[in-house]
Length: 224
Image (cartoon, rainbow, N blue to C red; front, side):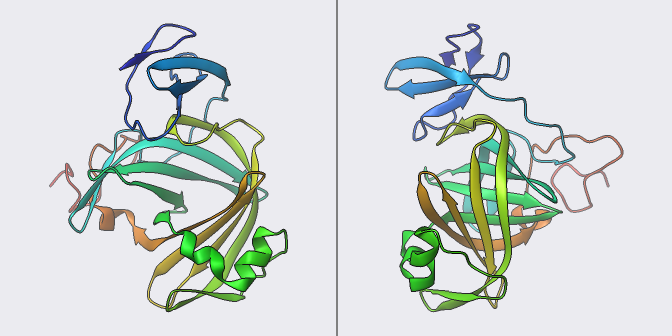
């Protein structure tokens, strides 16, 4: 537990491996360095949405457990989406992209950056929908390209989620449900490899209650 250097509120620390957290009382952006904390700015209040996921939601996929520790909200010309930072019980971090009822669970994969087309993308070239790239033995096709702007963030995050931060996001699919996401911003290019899911596949618990929406049957906590 730490205290916000701006308002003094007690803040939980969900992951010591990421340097930034946001005070949910005053929206202060806080940088943690060892035992010291420093306010380095303010973040915008994340616009409300109808996601059932919230900070503290837990997931289980196979034998691995995850908890949502942070969120970034991104906007593009046709809408917006969430990216949730998840910590696994083993201490690894993953991202859960959430858009239009589908979820993309990924972990960083530097090996996916070696494809020649990805190298050119990292250098500023464009990719096109339908274009294919390889990662390992899997061939991925580009399905979506967005120029996105950060609307705000909450919780623990590896970077400052300032309003106005921009990136180019490219989503790709493999032939058997594999997911690959490429993200390019002012700090460089990263690749994230994983799988696509519906919410039920992730066995969620501690979901947010939404007016007019109830958990589908089979979910933990759903009414019979």
